[in-house]
Image 1 (spheres, helix red, strand yellow):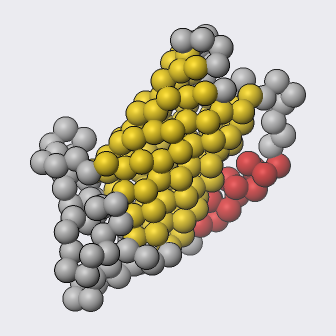
Image 2 (cartoon, helix red, strand yellow; image 1 turned 30 degrees about the horizontal axis):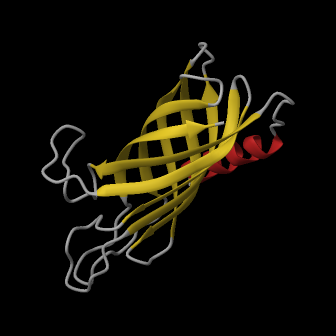
Length: 178
């Protein structure tokens, strides 16, 4: 329950935060893969037998030190091959960004909450992570991102398994347009 309160307060803070007039919109298509926790194919970031592609898009607005984003990603074979063919994972998160303005290099931290949808089942969850944008021009850059995703409640994935909180990491690379 304490985590839920923290997430609610964080979201209220995001909603109350006004984005300065110098805010810039951004759009970042990305590709990556999930690992650790409930991801069956990769034990860790470097120990990965078979990387299964995770595709997504992030978009939002940033000011000099903070911003907000929507992050949507989809992994088709998150749980590998299953008897019923249901193996996908969809996440849709609303995030608050804290940015370190360092010229063309802009590291950031991210915290948010939203939907985690494994195998067609809905669960609320959160993400926390960090990344960096490196801008080569005023409007174009590359983004590297690492996030931990976790559901807030137990989710039963398969008929003979017990429910548990979903937990995994996502590593991704993207192209940022602003």
